[in-house]
Image 1 (tube, one colour):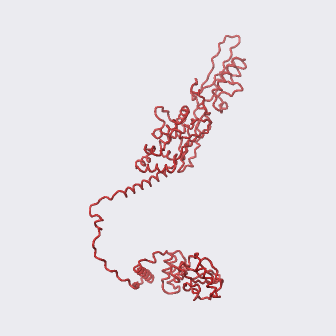
Image 2 (cartoon, helix red, strand yellow):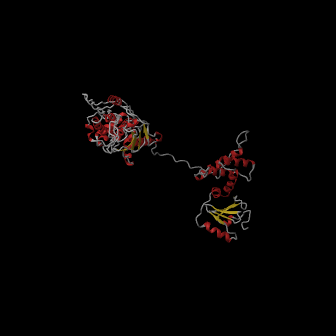
Length: 551
């Protein structure tokens, strides 16, 4: 029975631990192993049955099972001060609990057995799938892939550039526990930091600790206000070398350490971690800070984004400032002297003979020549009309100094040209002209015919009365209705600048020039056409209409 127990003891000592036996609680495996050792020593002085049971459990039933899994870190961030004085190997070296020594057989002079210990190789660290979201990146959000492991280099700084080392220096000088910094640096060198997301004022990443689930870590930094950005941009645009250095992924000392300090100082980094450690910083936050220094090495615009501005916005602003400075410098710089005569000398006042008196203005424009008709050529009548119109405009410009047509829109000029065509009625040539002008102005020939009637009634003001209702001030418009009633006319209905007969066949419209314009329509059709001659008196404007306004 004892030999069988001894064989079971040896077999269990070299068996691999089961996954359900691995610890999942907080850091405390060392203390539990100590309890297990005391339980083993107790079992060594008991009966053989107790000793055989101890081979299957190295700890008493009331204590949790010792952890056979290798430990690379503790999940509880509140570390005891005596951790550095441990007589065992470092936390990265796995150790197994000592198995109990079997009691000597009664009646035999057997020497006590030495404790049987076993060792195993630590499994490869498990790196979880990235928890970053690069698909949400934009101008003010950038996600960088995780850095791989790298060999520790204690002789040189962690970063490779002066600004990256300045970031590390701000971290280390503001930390309260050098041991946590060392372990955080080890995490960074082992590649335990997942993809890093940088936004204005915030660096975010997940850091893998000893537990299967990584910790969510944030490092916050104050963003610059508008006045500080203005100072920084002025300093960067003042020297073209600063812009060239930034484009080459370099950070000049004079730019980063000027009036506005880009790099943080001790205590300016504000770390936050989901682990229970309240250290400042915990090892997970320290690992993220160390990896952020490597980001700054590769691209100093990460620091500018962290301070509040994106790379594209900064480069666009610097380009504008640089162009404005160059323009001001070119204006302030005097003209380059050129050989020859200076313009001031050539244009110096001299005695010149007086100009001849201008010729008298002709009383009226002359008639253009007659254009012959040619097969496939332009319409000679249309050419004659255009030439006549050009001569009339030139005569007005010569006599008054201004062109009355220059301020017209395309539609107004088309109406003017159509109204200037002599004759009445829509002949075949007139219909062709109306169709061409209406198509050019994106209107219908009917609209053009109505507008021509308004232009012939009152010119530009008549066209405005046709197309633009407006709200006249009190006075002339309010006095029109009593005047119409005094002329034995019915009460006209007012609407804005218009007075309409109750039957709906006669209408008066007040123009901005103070004249009344008469319109007619079929009763109830609301198809108003200009009629008659404008007049200052509303009753006079109704004189000469085809239909009787009294009815």
